[in-house]
Structures are given as structure tokens and as C-alpha cells.
Image 1 (cartoon, rainbow, N blue to C red):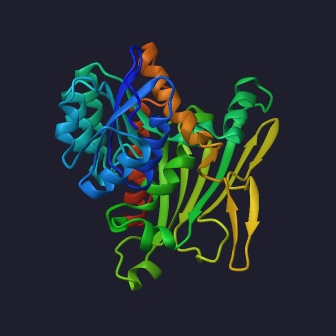
Image 2 (image 1 turned 30 degrees about the horizontal axis):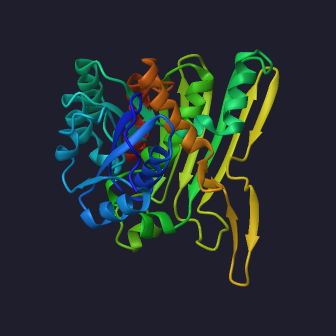
Image 3 (image 1 turned 60 degrees about the vertical axis):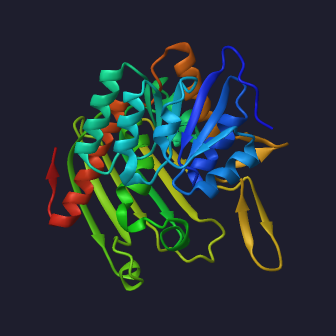
Length: 343
């Protein structure tokens, strides 16, 4: 049954009903100050299934029809990485606020075009790097801002996926690169802590495993980033870990400061569940408690909705998205050239 659109609610639409799109659908459908009015997906059967599951009234195969609904004030763009620009531009042209899934884009030109469209519209734009709402990362930011750790100097970040992700979860793995898919999460955190922009990027990548499977994208990237304020970040990601691992996510983050040290395992499970077949670590990325979505992903969606309703700038802006895209694109460029790239 569809939620009744109440006065004061934010009228909402979701573009993209895939794995990440369903997370947006669930969180918005259960928000107490938003009403999810429509879903659009090129796979209309998938959209219809999501609408039936979460009580959404309208579904469309073409997102242009969703954007034509006057009652929809804001949309989530949860399409594959390389398809964000056109949908964001169309949404802003239609006068909608936009929450776009990370990364903002897979090229600097696309990110610049999205930001230009947002500025022309006067609407809100937030990039959905929800890891900022993970408890450990959020608490570290509080400690930094309070001066408890001194000045940040160096960050080491590892974020990996199992082979399941590029071979089964994503049909479009060859259309993105790991800096845009995984490293972006940890680069966003490091930039947030350092409060500085990338100055020089030196990256390497290799293509063996996925290439042998006919998927034209590198197995791993390693990037060293020197920031304008002399902070340094070391970022690494791969997505060919064995599927026997208890989670599709392998994560590690270390922060070294003048007066402190932080060690974060963001994939530490809430609990471990073992059956006769396999051990799994549950409650890592998404979770429900008594039928309600909880955790950092839901917090990020709530933040965007509240920012729009209150007329406030969100924590992660389009400018942040552009500057992060520039660094991520430099990683891909540096690895391709085999030499550092200066920004």
C-alpha cells in the first residue's frame, strides 16, 4: 500500500532500481518526512517489483516521465557510475533537488557539467558518500576537529571487494574503474580529514584476473596522493578477492597525526553467522531492525532529505564531488601513463 502524500513531506522519486537503487527506495519509503511517489528503471519489471515491495504508486521505464511529475521535488540518481551526467542534468532542468550516488561522475568533464546544471537550477546537490556517517569515521572527525589528535599527517586506506562484485553484481564493471567504484569512499574520508586538495597523484594498476574472464577493467589500483597541505594518503583497492571470504568487503583505514593514531576496520561485523555451508558477517553495509532500515546508508539519505526541507547545504556538495572526481581521474590517468600527475 502506497504511503499517503502528507503536507510537509518531500515528494521524492528514485531513478535506478538496482542494488543501490533499492537501498534508496527502502530508506525513502520509510522516511517520516518524505513520500516516495515514483520509481524509474530501464528494466520496468524490476521497477514494478520494487514498487510492489515498498508500496510505491508509479513506475516508469523512462526517467523523463518521472521528472515530469510536479509533486516530485527531489530525486535519487542511482544509475551505473558512467550514466550520472545525463540524468542529473535532466533532473536539474526539471527543477528537482538531486542526491546522486557516488561517484559524482567518471570524468572531470561530466562532473563539471553536473555542477554547472546544479548552479543554474539553484537546487540542492549532494553526492552520496555515506561512509561519512559510519560511526568510526564520524567520531574520528569529531576528535580531529576538537584537536584531540593534533594535525593529520598520513592516511592509509584499503577497500577491497570479492570477485562476486565485478563478475556477478555489476553487469557494467568494464565501464568503471576502481578509483571511482571503491577508492572514492576512502579518498572522500581522507580529504574530509585533511581539509585539503590533491596536488600530485602517483598510481599503478594491473590487469590479469578480470582480463582473463573477458572483463576489461584492472584488478587493482594503488595510488599515493600528496595534498596541498603536505598530508599524504596511500589508497589501494582490488575486486578479485576470493568469494569464500565472509564478506564482499575488506576494509582498513589508518590515520597518523602529530598527537594521535586512529585504526578503523569499517567492515568489522555486527555479528558473525555460521551455517553448515558458510560463515557470513552480517550487518556490515545494510541492516534492518524490526523492519526499519538503520545505519550509515539510511543516515545519509535522511541528511539529504532534511537538508532540502530545511534549505541547508548538505555535508557533501557538488563542489566536493568535482574536486574528488579530479583526484580519482588523476589516479586513472597516472596508472595509464605510468607516471605522476600534477593537479
